[in-house]
Image (cartoon, rainbow, N blue to C red; front, side, top):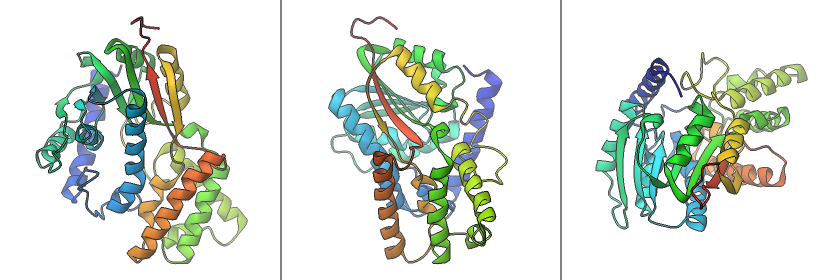
Length: 325
């Protein structure tokens, strides 16, 4: 597990991020989000992009749970951030305890929950400021949605998760696997951004324009995109979203999960749209049509093996005999 100082630094980074975002009008709610120009390339910029990306992620998570686990379960959402996924599970009748080390994220999540108008069929939801290693209780399912890769001792984290589940309980994850991302995947993103730039539909034509003149310059741009996607940050950013961002890669996570749980199902996530949709500019009817096509293409290309996924879903089950593997 992370040291106390490490957790404090991690929490401070997420505190700062959510404070900046909410001051700029950000609403972390999949159903009540608003346009927010604070985001220059992220799907969070436009509610339509949010539905195309996180809406599909949420659909997959709910489909995995309802198909293999059931309804009305007691869920621990570990590393919930500002709570948008916890809220959706509760809106679908689940009983969710959500924890995060960021006080500002939890404060924001509680505010959004208090303003929730979608109460029909609501299960229950409570938010707590807490690191996972201090969590207690026994649950039907533990959810890690973009949080497991921030945790240091992945084997210990997964072991603790297994101890906090009922026999037959489940662990559900949506986590990055950027180590799978290839130069040819980045090249497709370069092609798309280049065409958007030439048609004045990219947020920064100067960014791509520098690399449209010759093959050597284009190769540089492809390399920069590859770095951007594997490190989840722009080339000029000094660091990731937090000190422990991408501390554990996808293969390490999958290995730890399989060592403790019986794998029920794995699904590939998206390859590139989460760092592309929000970068488009122009008339909404055009950009939204482009966004929908890119989303369809991303899913199709990953399914056919033309692109490598950058995220994965994993659903695992604790052995029914209650023994920890």
